[in-house]
Image (cartoon, rainbow over all chains, first blue to last red; front, side, top):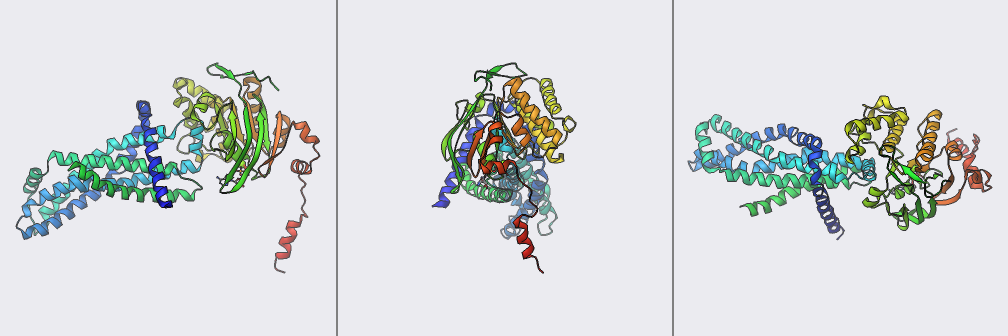
Length: 250
Length: 273
Ligand SMILES: Nc1ncnc2c1ncn2[C@@H]1O[C@H](COP(=O)(O)OP(=O)(O)OP(=O)(O)O)[C@@H](O)[C@H]1O
Ligand SMILES: [Mg+2]
C-alpha cells in the first residue's frame, strides 16, 4: 500500500513537473544558450558510446542471423534482419538505455545536489522556477538530440553488420548484397517508427530524472540514492513503454 | 522606528514601493514529531532591523526558511506584507531575499553569473546595465576581484560576501540574513553592519538578521528576539536586553569562559591512569 502510494506520488509530481515546464515553453528562445549547452551534454557526450555499442550490436545481430539463416540457405537476407531490428527496436532502445545511464544519471545528480545544497531554494526565492531554467531546456534538447542519436545508432549498427557479413568466413556476403537486402526490407517508415519510439523514451527518461533529482530530500547521501532510483526507474519505464509504444505504432 | 508608510526605493529603476513588514502568528513546526518551533509570535515592522539570536540548534534557520516561504508551518500563519510568502504570486509582488547560512551559491555558475541570473531572468535592463549593477554590488562587499571565479574557488567568508552581494542585486524590500558575519573578520563584520544599516536608512529595507554577533545585534538593531529551544523567550530593544535580569539571557549574552568546567573532569577520570 505504501509502495503504491509512493509510485502514485511519483507519477503525480512528474506530470505536474511536465505541465509546469511546458507552461514556460514561450521562454525557450530566450534560453537559447542553455538549450545549446544541453544539446551538447545530451548529444555530443553520448555519441561515442552510442556508436561503439551500436557497432557491436550490429555485429552480433549479423552473426546470430547468419548462423540461423544459413540453415535455411537464406543468409543473403542477413541485411534485412539487421536493418529492421536495428531501426525498429535496438537502435532506439539502446540509445535510450545509454541516455538513462549517461545523461539521466548526470541530470539527477546535478539537480539533487542543487536541491541538497539549497540552490533550488535560492532559485525559488528569486522566483526563477527550476522547471523553467533547469527542466525545460533539457526536455527541448532531448527531443532534438534523440532522433540524431538514433539515426546514427542505426547507421553504425548496419555498418557493423555488414563488416561481419563480409569478413566472417562462413558468411562472406558482399556489402552490396547486404545493403541491397537491407534497403529492400527496411523502409523509411521503419526508421521513423524507431525515431518516434526514441523520442518517447528520451523525453520520459529526462523528465523522470529531473523530477527525481528535484524531489531529493535530506543530505548528500541522498544524492547517490536518487541517482540509482532515477536510472532504475528509467530502465523499467523504457522497457514497459517499449511494449505499449510498439503496439500503438505497429 | 520609521513610520509604517515609509517607501522602499529601487535604486535602479527608482520605483517606489511600501516598506514591508512580517507577521509571524502562533507558528509551530514539527519534523517527524519533534517540535522545532513552538508557538512563535512576533512582528517585524516595515523598515525595521530585527535581530534574532539564540543558541545553536534553537530553530533560527528553520524560522527564516518559513518566513522566506520555503517551508510551511505545521500550524500558525506567516504573512509578509500581509501575504503568504510560500506563494509565487507573493514573491512576484514583494522582493524578498535570503542570505543562506552556507551561501547556497550556484556551483555551476561563476560569481558574475550567480549575481546576473536574477536581473537577466527578470529582464531588468540590458547586459551593460546588469554588469554595472553586479559589479557595484560586488564592490560594496569588496569581492569584485573574484568576479570570474567559481564558488568552489572561494573561501568561506568570500562565499558569504558573494551571497550577500547576490541578495543586494535583487533589490530586496525584505532581506533575511542567516548569520551574515559568521565567517568574517571583525572589519568585514562591521562593514556588513554598515550595509544593513544603510539599506534601512537610505532604502527603507526591512531586515531580519539571525546572528551570534553581539556588536551587530546591540548596535544597529531596532529590536532583538532571543530564540531558545524553539521558543521566543524574549523580545525587546537592545537596551531592554542589556538590562534584562533573566538568567538565561544574561548567561547567553555574557558567557563565562570556565577552563575548570566539570565537563573536562569527566574526560580526565575516563583517561587511563
Ligand atoms: N529538515 C529538518 N528535519 C528535521 N529536523 C530539522 C530539519 N531542519 C532542522 N531541524 C532541526 O531543527 C532544529 C533547529 O535547527 P536550525 O537549523 O534552525 O538551528 P539554528 O538555530 O539555525 O542553529 P545554528 O545557530 O547552529 O545555525 C535542530 O535541532 C535541527 O536538528
Ligand atoms: Mg542556522
